[in-house]
Amino acid sequence: MEHTKEFLEIAEDARSRVKEISVDETLEKVKNGANLIDVREDNEWNDGHAVGATHIGRGVIERDIVGKFPHKNAELILYCGGGYRSALAADNLQKMGYRNVLSMAGGWTAWKEANASTES
Image 1 (cartoon, rainbow, N blue to C red):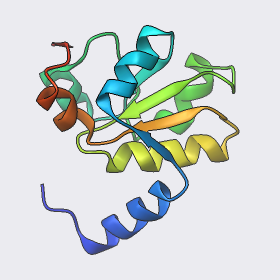
Image 2 (tube, rainbow, N blue to C red):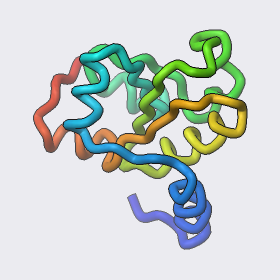
Image 3 (cartoon, rainbow, N blue to C red):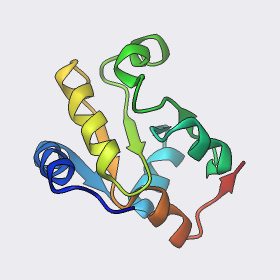
């Protein structure tokens, strides 16, 4: 997908405040209890997602996150298709008081390229 200059500008601004980690780092953290959250759209999730991920779409994450993860110190690793939407969502969660939010660099594309486990 081709992103507009305006979208890339706001995504890069968010990325400047969000820590990004690799797929390998994500796998290690999830193995140690971190929560993996897929922020893609419903149709993307239905086409396949990371094993063990929780789906909270980008459009509703700010509304629904407290109900699913009420502890503001919970380790949350967000991913999307390529790493932009997850950075935007992570930035907003930090503004909501979440202190341990990460974004997976490269998103679903990087996950599949790493041959990490998926399910439909």
